Image (cartoon, rainbow over all chains, first blue to last red; front, side, top):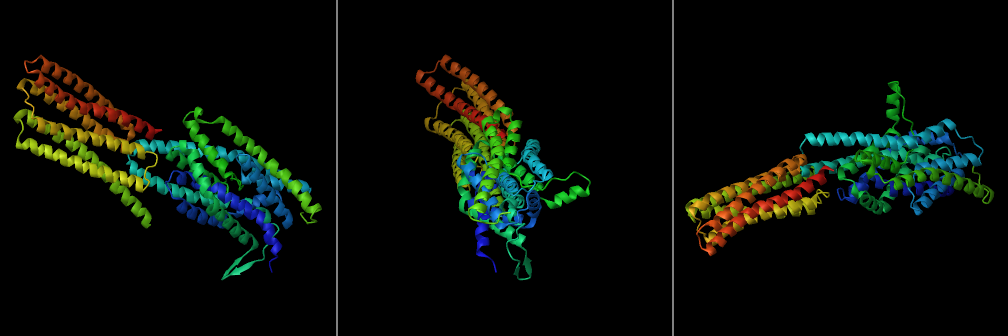
Length: 349
Length: 218
């Protein structure tokens, strides 16, 4: 029988999922919806389906990496880790600073490690930290390649503007679906990853299908992201669309495709196995920030259009956010765990 | 797949409508030239009326197309980035058709008597004006398919407009050097200005097109 307390503990992760759906769906479909190329309803339905699919089919890889960073075996500890990450995200958003759920959760896990005297796996941490730099850089490089390729083709293939518009709509939907899938695959670990080691849910038999605790967590996490998309993403998408208004529709599409490719690369177990099979260096499976991937792509396109197009102050603010988010989550988690253990007498380690 | 098919179906239809609109502009330019020529050669004849009727027909067909294109663009929220520019282009191109129609109507109503020695000036002026409109139509088509080519066509529009101005100036000098009554001179000058004004309008549209094309390319 499922302990009702388990559901209460899971709420912090589901809240994080909701926030992720509300905010990051904007990175995937914001431009398309903001520019009215795709209706919000279509975007929300596609986004929700593919986020849940991505989480269930390809979410395991990044979750394992977070598990290696800190295997939180007690459910109250996992609850506080996810809650402090959620608070860090909330506070950063309140102060208008760009925020990444991935960085918040990693900071919170390290906070738990400090509190529990559990040594942080340095090689995993290095891997995670390096991806935070590689992710926007890689996204920028992909955006530059895509931009040049499209520019080269556009000069040679004379497609009617109206037809190009139709192709662009289809491309935005496909890129959005890929983006949502990648978002689910890459970021589901942020939502439910910390709960996996505690195995809080008993296996459930649905027809011929036996769902393990981890699989149920992925489904719940995916659904919470989808809920965020449906209940709150409309405003974010509209705002993002107009914020990015100075980008042309093509540049915006390139930004979404680059973001989706990078998120997929950092989440795909299949790609990792394929690269390993060829004897090539593999791409670490780490939850990366969808916002930073988009920012990396936009900076890449801006570089092509001349460095003057880059708003350096905004970029500095983003980099400040990269540093402050994990630190804030780490401190919050440490303090929260202290209270949970010493005031409420919970087992957090 | 039904929504995609309908999306591409609508796209194809709109593409055809835009192409057809430019066809109307090109055809009206040709018919206008023939109309003026026949008037200069034979005066107000049956053939001139046929040409005038055809230009009137083309103008109203282009109006229907313009409204359809505008409705399509807005009701289906197509090309959000360039919608305003396309509407601006179609509307100013449509003004060219109105100018063709108004000028032929002016010939029809006023029936000016054009002395034989001035006829070749009007003919040259009309030919040059039509050349600028032809290049503009090509530029307009290029805007939709290959905006890189727009400057080359625009260059020719401006070149022909300048030539038309020179011809118009010479023609007007010849008019006022003649021994005609002042009232005739003023009437003939007005016709020269009217025809030359079409090239001026073509140049204005080309200037707009240049900006629209730059916007598309950035």
